[in-house]
Each structure stands twice: as structure tokens, then as C-alpha cells.
Image (cartoon, rainbow, N blue to C red; front, side, top):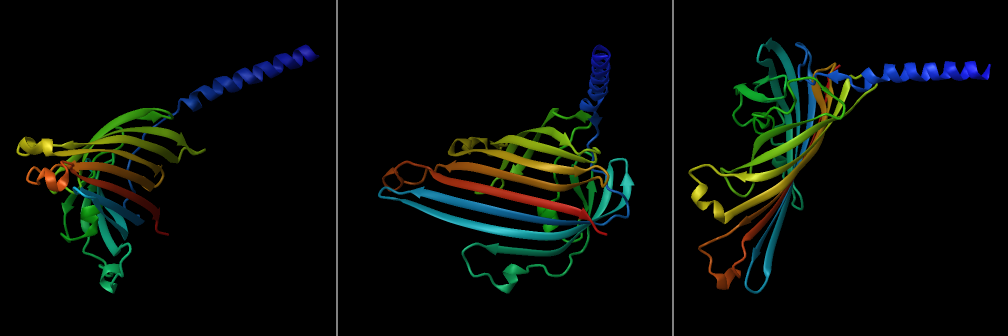
Amino acid sequence: MIRMASRSFASVTLALALFAQPALAQRVLLQIKPHVGDTIKTHLTQTIEMSGTRWNASADSTKTMTTTTEVFSRAIPFQWTSSGTLIHAITDSVTARPHGTAASRADLQRNSMPSAPTVLRVASDGAIEVVDDGDPNSEIRHLFAEMPSMLPRKAVSVGEKWSKEMRIPLAGDPGSEGTVKATLQLDSLSRNAEIAYISIRGTISRFVDADRRANSSTYHTSGTFTGSMQIDRALGWITDARSVVSVHSEIADDRASKAQYSGKPLEIQTKVSVWTRAMKQR
């Protein structure tokens, strides 16, 4: 009797193990594909912390600045195309306040009235482009537009990684861009596989085009990019995304005398933290 029970238990264990194999290897397609007619409310918080140090012959001079911006907006998909979903993006309000200063009412509510809708095309891999800019000064354009693709075009399984390369503007050097080389990973899925959890790790280096290459030795930039995102596969949208970009830059001023600046470059530390959360409007 004991022997038969042991055999039955072993058979059940083996069956469960065989059944579990496909579940562990489940492959899912990660796509940004919202439903036409939905209204998705978005709340973005961005904090920029900058500090610059100029080394003098007698002492160092360090200045810091922190600014937090909050944007409330709506995304309304209205047409599906083969290259992505067309979306009306509307900024409802923007608040921005430099830390440590007395903000005026204008600072706190720079845009209390909804902006003219901007038409964006959102590809299934997450790339965003501006199709029709209803308001050139819209925060939508500055904060969301021209985003590179972040998702793989093929189905992936939990634990699988993929690589992406993108460019971002660099603070402290107008007109310059940084190259981000990132590795993304599907960390896990919710029980019903409707929510996908993704982590991001990457490095940043300065991108120098041909016109600026002659002066590239005077500007050095390096940094890191970390983040995470949650994709609601039923909604077809990213419902939570967090990222932190930390950049260290050194700018050598060839015109400055060594007697005045001790031959040390200007050092700039920049940290940009962004948290975006979204939900379907009921």
C-alpha cells in the first residue's frame, strides 16, 4: 500500500513538473497597442538635480540647483495604422518649482488650461514620433515626443534580455547628445500574464558628430541609466515607468589660466529622476 502511494505521488510530481515546463518557458509579446476610444490619464514627475564645481586656485566653488516638474496629461487613441497607433496627447496642467526658492503662482501653474492636442504616432515597440504639433511649446513634445523604441519585436520569456541604443540631450553642453547603451530584461509576469515587469540597466557616453569632434577632448561625459517599467498587456500601455539618469561631466576651459583654475576642469553632476504612472479613465 505504501509502495503504491509512493508511486502515485511520484507520478503526480512528474506530471506537475512536465506541466510546469511550458509555463516557465512561456513567451509573450510586449507591445504598446492601446485601444481606440480609450482615454489614458498620465501623471509624470521629473526631478533634475544639478551641481557644478569650478576649482579655483585657493578654493572650490560649488553651486547646486534642483527643479521638480509635474505634468498631468491624457492620451486618447483615435486611429490604428500599420506603423503605430495615432494618439491625441493633451496636457491638462504643468507645475514646476525650483527647490529652495519662493515660487510665484506662474511658476506653480505655468499651464493651467489644457493645451491644443498634439498628434503622436506610438509604435508597438514603444517608439514615439510627432505627427502634428498642435502646440510647439507643449510639455508633451519636450517630455514624451521622439522617444526611441524600448521593446523587442519578437516574443520573449521571463529572464530573457535584449539590448537597445538611444540618444538623449546632455545637460551643460547645449546641442550635444549622449549615447545610452541599455540592457532590458523581462523580470516576471503577473499570475494571469497581463502585467509584465521589466528592468533596465545602461551606460551613457557622449556622442560627438563630425562638426564637434575637433573639440571633443575638452568635454568628457560618463554616466549610468537605470529604470523599470510595468506594461499592462490588456490596456496596451505602460502603466508605471521609473528611471534615473546620473551623469558626470568634465569641461576643460583652455582659455582659463592655470594660475586661476589650477588646471582642473569644471565638473558637473546631473541626476534626472522620472516617474510616470498611467491608468485608464473610467
